[in-house]
Length: 124
Image (cartoon, one colour):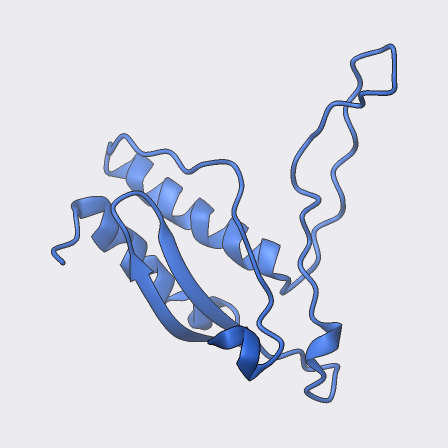
């Protein structure tokens, strides 16, 4: 498939992720017309290859407090260094900054979907 200009930018920055996160290895990925699918292998240096300790951090979004009479918002969680959320946040930010400099109209959706692959059965 021939990538669009934005697709080429997304690919360029995806391939640079391990240069910025030494604990990340890239596996398969595909750039789609309006999104990307990719497998990141995150090696936790503090854990003895125990994949059960891998977590993601979805605290980067605000949600309405339905039980409050005031329209309050939950607080942001603290970013976790080398977490999947931090890696994707940095990736999306890099692509967005680059497209802004090139005066390319581009916006990411605010969230991303993740799934932790803990074993071969889930991988297939």
